[in-house]
Amino acid sequence: MKKIFIILILGSTTLFSSMGSFAGPHFDRDDSRGGGWQGRNLERDDDPRGNWQGRPGEENRDRERRMRQERGVERLKQHRWQEGYVMPQHYRGNSYKVDYKDNNLPKPGRNEQWYKINNDYILVNSDDNSIVRIMGF
Image 1 (cartoon, helix red, strand yellow):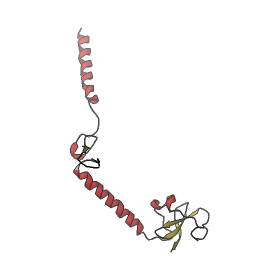
Image 2 (image 1 turned 180 degrees about the horizontal axis):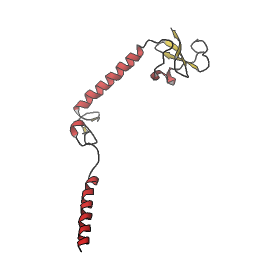
Image 3 (image 1 turned 135 degrees about the vertical axis):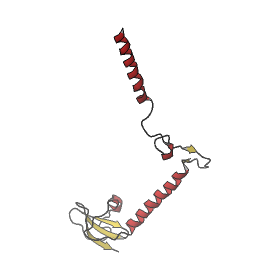
Image 4 (image 1 turned 180 degrees about the vertical axis):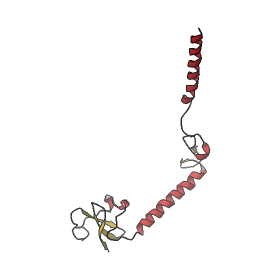
């Protein structure tokens, strides 16, 4: 009888102590820092366009993020190209590639590609993305 009583007490203690781990999600519930889904606090305001608006600070953060992106784009536009430099990854997409025949450029060598960036034609080695030649028009 004494063994059964001990087993019941230990079993119930283990059961009740493990219930706390199933109680809720394991992310931060602190609303002041905006963590987890509870921190989002999205509500629909009286916006005629029906846009979702969050906290007042989110608008400022979005504006700052856009300004940083614009500054980055402006910085890339002002970039001075030099032979031997590595071309930034931002410009390596197909939208900057040009055909040498259509633009009266010299034929590129093997593993080379012409790019047009800010009215400059830049010949880039495709293997290591280094700038081989620059032609400004």
